[in-house]
Image (cartoon, rainbow, N blue to C red; front, side, top):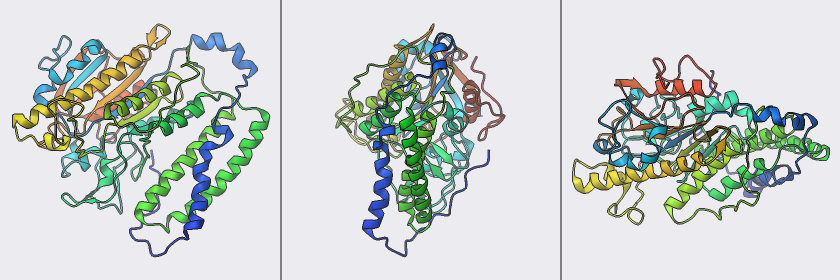
Length: 472
């Protein structure tokens, strides 16, 4: 698939835009999510929709996919099972997944060959979902080689849901250069890429993510009057996009990325307006819905675990309501120095510092406790998904949750033998409850080829794949 071409990034800005005129343009873009068509809209059922309700309820539920990333690798001795196949024992870091053991696949032997050529973290994080070479750059000409697996799915099936995909995170984007390795820090902040040079902005504020999601949960159809309003607003959107595109090449590099994020938000609003102006193309409908009065998060909580779980709850909500079938989530930017001391006893100090353990117990012991905590959050997500029934299955049965990091041992920055877990049964087609020990050097992208097939978006090749992993 041909990548989307982007205008070259300009490093220096040689002019200054009047602040008042810029705020006027930005205000138009920022105000769009507050439009009536984006909020609480009266539901008007189409005649054929009512007639097809019973038939739709018997249609097989779709497969959902979440790609979840945690930084800084793992302490391998406490992560990988010793036994291959079914019946494996869960090592210390994986023990929180005991109740869901029959719903997971644990992988070993997976590799990203194009990450061996880069220093530090950035050449490993940025291509976590692309598997292709990351261009070493200070920021002028970023490239991760191709689009990410989630965005390939979004291009193919994103039109079936109000939101093509949902990107969430915890840490804000960091720009600038890591002078230790000569890479832009942007590479450590994104895993979802619309094209080799265009990352997707992740939402880190739970309330804003909730409002984005809630606006599509409450709208199925729009009235004739709303349709006319929609057409007027779409004309405004077109004008805003045209003006913004003219401005882009006159901005500095960091401002260009900020503007691109605004443009992505505008396009997202436009796609939602278009979605609700057409008859619903989906044959399948959720059999149940969340409560009408779901409380909106107040914002970013001070507690890290609460923040993480709010975001995981939003993924469950998005999948449950079929607002989207594709999501990604980053626990933190890579090279994260987050201190887990208040959250996990015996882990005081920075996460990144502990990952450089030098085989010393005073570092690898807190390191492995942090690994275990990340799996506790995966277990929390699986609990939520498993509690929602979809016919004879659960939402967990109808999902695939890719969970892992971009390196194995954080001390070596090693992109071989990656710590990867796949949770859920992909619509009943995945034989879970196994440790799959692949031959050394097996491309991680072989797993991605298999996942794309489960999502109904099959490809012959993705990234550096050499085939498909057998999941059944």
